[in-house]
Length: 67
Image 1 (cartoon, rainbow, N blue to C red):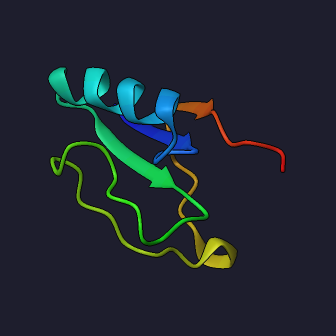
Image 2: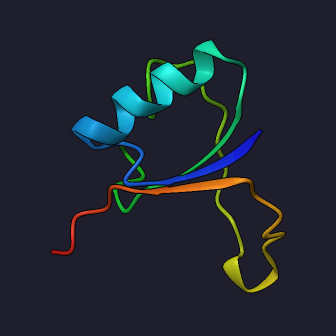
C-alpha cells in the first residue's frame, strides 16, 4: 500500500514508519526539518512539488506538530 505520513521525522512518525516498512508498504514522508534523518535509514525520500503531487495514496497518517 502507498501511505503518506506527515511528521515523518518526529518521535511518533519515525516509529510508525518503522512498523509500516516491516510490511513492505511504500511510504511517503513529509517533514519541516530537512536536516533530520527519516526513520532508520530504510526510507528513501525526496522533496515533492505538492501542486503536482499524485494523490493516489491508500492511507494517510498525520503526526505533524501544529507549531
